[in-house]
Length: 149
Image (cartoon, helix red, strand yellow):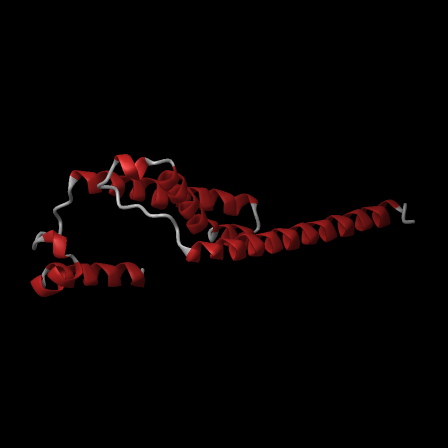
């Protein structure tokens, strides 16, 4: 709640201060709420998929998976975006559409190795925990049935 309120206040301050608006958005030419059609399409995509759909999927996943696993996989989103950007650039789309300002991911994309490694460790840990839980459940069942070995 506090973050939303802080963002709202910041938005008001920037929009009512021509100096701040020109500094933060020189392309706006004093009109902060004028959104070009090309930007509107990207904005709708961002709102629908990166906000609404992602939060719905995360909420759904929290019902069925361990919260630490769900949280861990949220770090996969930037890596996925970098991979998709690279695919778009390598496909030649940016050559046929010169107004598109996409570039290949740089050396920072090597951080994806750490993301994949950390997710592997997290998944392995969750798997071993489940394995231990199942083993203790089977032992408890054997004790209850009197069939302990």
